[in-house]
Length: 384
Image 1 (cartoon, rainbow, N blue to C red):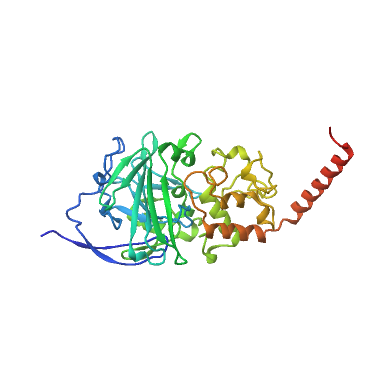
Image 2 (spheres, one colour):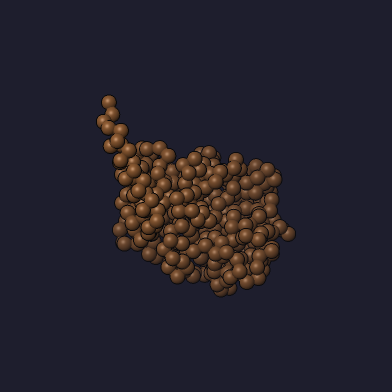
């Protein structure tokens, strides 16, 4: 008779719920991925999951979550980390995390049948691996079959029709267009190198997670498992990013800046794909004009809408940053890849931030510049 164990199902990030199921732990080989090998044809070859449908991880595959995750068209994202034996992530002074060769970051994408009742289950669409090879990070994508029993290697992305019951009780549908390997590079290629994004700094991971034996801070858990070395013994001494939709973790401004960091700053950052726009949406940027306040566009076009500035304090309706977040037009929306729907709740946060924003000195300077521009135009007379 095979040995069986009870496994805890965790549903993040919508609502945590607990359910016990039996898993054939003894019959499952240990998880393993050779970073020097070509991607396997099937995800199951790596044995990352004891129960694929419910995303129950195998031993040494550690689930985690981010303080403020990126918006993925209302999908639920399951995140896991696997490390080779004796390997560990190194914590650096400012909270940067250095992953060893062989590390695998696992992200499964699924759609709940009902956002209000996670216990009703979900439809899995894909699982993405970020494998740290000797030459650098590589993204590998797997598409799930309808039964969620196996996922197959894919380099062309995938297309899936999904539907769900939304928070307001309405039924919504969406065509998921999972990016191909080249599209992934648009967000994940920085300074010419492929990199993971949310998991590269401790501030995104410094939070509690509900494990089978109870809640515990993720940094503490990783340290206890030997997956993290050099981190402060007290997580309060490590940096912590606010949770975008939890007012107890930060001000409206702090939470809005965290949201922009996780949804926009992969491109709008030094050495990022869109840094030629002059817009730096990283959480660490402290100069208002650099993150958009009274920042004029580099080029005109539909992406600007009716706005003169990325952010016009007190006027979200005239701020083209918000205009682009509200749009689903491929020629206007931001981000370009990875979003096809409007994140209504995220847009509301950014709108509130801009509406409450006050930069009196900058506003006065802009008003003087506008008046001087008008006077110069009047002095120049009519143009033929």
